[in-house]
Image (cartoon, rainbow, N blue to C red; front, side):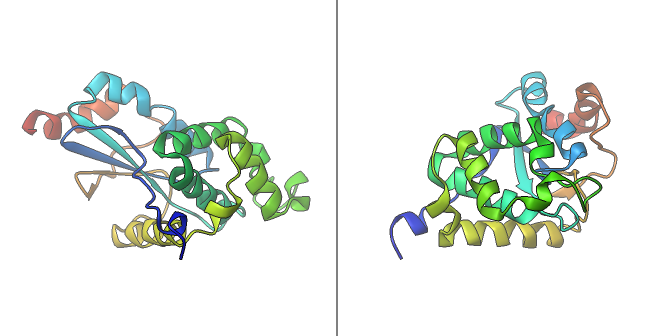
Length: 190
């Protein structure tokens, strides 16, 4: 195993506070997109020194390229750092239709290959992810995200957990101030 293959995948996190909000996101899901787009505003409102938003990738089989896209995001993190992976996620969410099927089963993406998807995500990352996509550390991180989500009882995206406790009151449809109200007891105790 080369040094690169064992390079760890850094956490996909915003902020550095003691309270942890985990967002379980599927990288082509429209509802996950809504949640992802609120992360920076949430960190700004809560304070980066008080809150850590931890992104957990939740691959879902009905999003047919989900596994390839998820693994490519983790490859971007391993090869270029968490900031690169978050930049890649923003690019994927901005052009979701390039990575998803119409009604989960048809459309232009029927003709795309996993290699086509990986090349498109490499362009978002600003680097070739072909090698990193195959790294053992990326495979381990992918499996860990899946297992962790299952262990937490998370079955759909987006899902939320505050300090490792699933929070069913939170949803992507809520504004940031409602998220803050739900987080307030944990933030006040920290």
